[in-house]
Image (cartoon, rainbow, N blue to C red; front, side):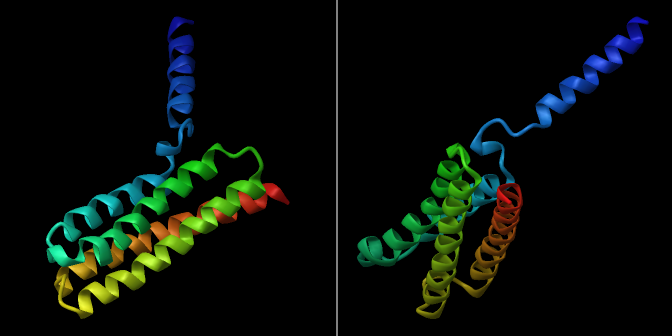
Length: 139
């Protein structure tokens, strides 16, 4: 009997632990945060004259991605959640453009660009899934 109870409690604990409780439990936020760190690391090597140009723009975009995911998470209605997650998608696309510019002007290597672009695609796909999930709950 005790072993059954222990098994049930362990199962319930696993379910509770796997639930999304805060915004940083969301995979979209986790992968977005990785992208933020990659952008900060990469832009740290840009020329100093770009500090208030491309560096600032790229960093603000990257932070906007995770900030809007976090804000969307805290909203009560799925319509509002979807709105913030969609803003996050816009920031991802804007960052993808800035990555192309940074590569094309020679601030980042093709190899580094590929890593950043791949991470941006991952974040884009997961965020799209978050939007679809929110929309389906809104219907």
